[in-house]
Amino acid sequence: MSIRPVKRISQSQPTMEGAGVRLRRAFGFGDTSDFDPFLMMDDFRNDRPSDYMAGFPWHPHRGIETITYVLAGSVDHGDSLGNRGVLGAGDVQWMTAGRGIMHQEMPKGDAQGRMHGFQLWANLPSSLKMTAPRYQDVPALAIPEIVDDDGVRVRVVCGEFWGKKGPVDGVAADPRYLDVYVPPGKRKSLPVEIYRQAFAYIFEGSAVFAGASQPFGALREEVVDGEEVLLRDKVGDRSLVVFDSGDEVVVQAGEQGVRFLLVSGRPLREPIAWHGPIVMNTEAEIRQALSDLRGGTFIK
Ligand code: FE
View 1 (cartoon, rainbow, N blue to C red):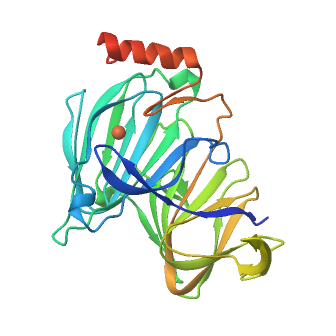
View 2: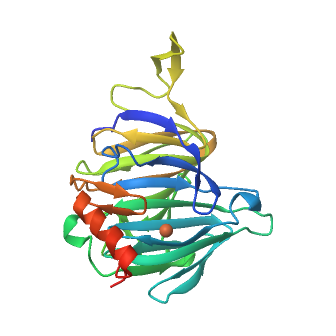
View 3: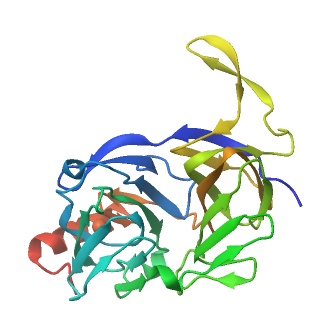
């Protein structure tokens, strides 16, 4: 086994989306090649209803899939296929926009006013960008959870892991989406096949991820504000960790334990033309999408 070294660590950044929802963006827009086949990930954890009530009213998508994972509160959704529903805590919605969908996503807090969740965008290969749109709504109970002897817990939202298969299927980029908890002080190796690109996003506790050349908690030199400082590769809430190649990720949880998303997929390596919620391969395809929107032919 070869351990995937940490390529880069960053923090998700505050941004505003939809009709005025305050959220944090882990990555998205600009150069997303390190994340291919994924395009964007937003962390919408908020404890103040005024920060998210405006929601994401009717908007179009084409050429991508969006994956919404709710941890607290709920999301009312509706779309141009006539689907209506509510996503609650622990539920997942996997939307394949394909050739076009119009939908809205309206967050509602729980009894304490909290709204916690994540939205990930996966790219579709050129052969499927104009496929028929579809939704897969997955209730929390349908998501397998693996509990290991050492207390490590893994929810398999999508893909296959340790012999368990997540409920979402037929997704092009062969994504694997795991919600991992590692108890305080425990060390764990998690296999991630070499052909995948992988990242982790920490949302509770802290941890250190090790690489072959970086022993746990190793000090590394970095220049901060023009000064050389020694840093430990410890990551905490809202840290995004991008992994280099290898076939396993090794994590050592901090004293509070750690919970993170571990997401990986087979890169598409196709050209990207991006216009907001529409992601195609060429500028001509973007112009076509915009002209379809203007002409009322976006939904086929
Ligand atoms: Fe959307």
